[in-house]
Length: 178
Image (cartoon, rainbow, N blue to C red; front, side, top):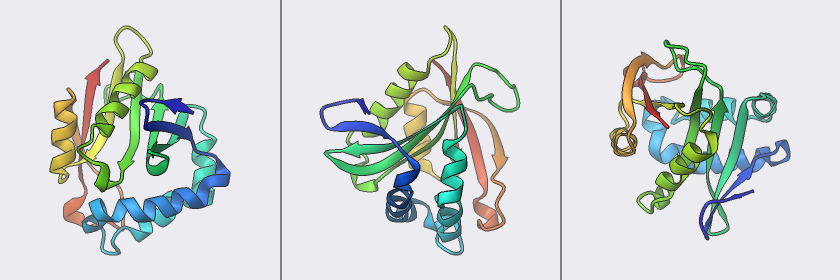
């Protein structure tokens, strides 16, 4: 467990907690992202947070996956991939912030910023490391948040999904040196 503040912790996710992860994502994902999907995100949640997929993701040697716990309640997830190249440059010293989802009721309390700052400190691999992420181009609040923390758009691409509304597939890769 990692203590970030008095009320904020990161707890590694284990395979035995797959149902808790699934239930949490059924609660916190749809309010922010259901508009992207004809089925309100059910197919995405069912595939990404199924037990079989969690086993696969936990087995990746460069992956660290956490529950975000705030005031003793599981409030989100954080997943980091270490030594992950930023496409298309393929810099070997990158760290990808693959997933960060937080219950909308907790936004604006400094939790997201505390998480990003922790990732920057914890995963700096060299004197000049790159922290990068992918964000939907329609998520204006998320884009402003990352830009405020120093991330810059470096390229764009289309999310590869047969289930998502075609007009919503646009994404940016954003990065910053840490």
